[in-house]
Length: 469
Image 1 (cartoon, rainbow, N blue to C red):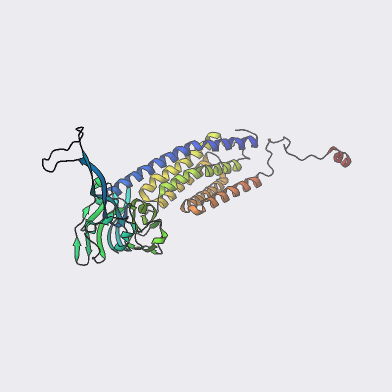
Image 2: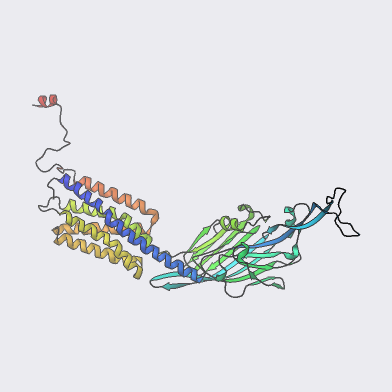
């Protein structure tokens, strides 16, 4: 290696930058495994029913209007039934009025009161080395409508056909439904049918309930499978949702967060209360606002798996260049007085060993979990580098300084991976501490080489030198 400490320092810095190549390859492998894992999870979830977002109930009331048109037709002799002609033998036409009943855009009515109670039971499905949390949900919807508000959006001569009213509840997928679905108003039970795919209204269930103005409040009971997430749209003038589950790691998402939630190792309970003023959706409209409700007014829970070690491994590969550089710097400082300093090939082998650490961690984490895999991989890497320092680098007792540094580095990396919020703080503090220690330890270093004048030595003016003489 170079005899000049300055050139050695620069050369080691270049070697550290070269480690971006294996670290990039490692991060690509981690990303590939992560994509494969997510693809498998998505397939299992879809087979079980997939994520579910319930929107509705939505009352759809057909509207017609009688329209009078001015028309003309050939005049006919009432006696002979022949078409009348004038003196020039032209056909004679007569004008008349015709009234036609035409369909108009229906009235869409959301409920005044919307109470949803959801109880879910979760289980874990496995495929190969991957596991996916899935759930079964039992739901009860209680709701009623202000039918008097429907007339407020009608134009003159338009008529509501209450006897043809239809109740719709939209779902992400009908194939997730399980058990019997029951829609009732008091003692009256209504048959339910799937929403036809051809009418473009989305998927879900519907019922022709007839005239709802004399009916009592409605109740709908549903059972369904699901995975990854469950949610409902806040469609009532006052919407309340209560959800109870045995899943211990929920993530509350959607447009509205719960008012209260209690999370324990045995599961969680959460409640939402959303007034209609909190969302920009009218209760009665002439257009179907269900797509907007599913985007803008959702109460949602995501079933997460907290130990996403692929994300941690990817972050470790990104932080890897920092810890490789710190290891290189430690070796450089430890053998700066050695008569046989470390060779560039030895630096490269140290960097490659730390790059392979990430692959080891991913491979074992898929089998035994993140923390045991990290401890095993970090212990193997530290042991390998400690043995390499003692035998190949001939560090002697200084090997313990290298091992101590490696233990500190991998401890900080573990804490950084476990806590995203403090990752920047830990990384920047460690980098500053390493730089400060290097500056202190090399404060008297002859960077130009032994026996050479210091490049930045302060020189006194010639007048001061003469006076001193």
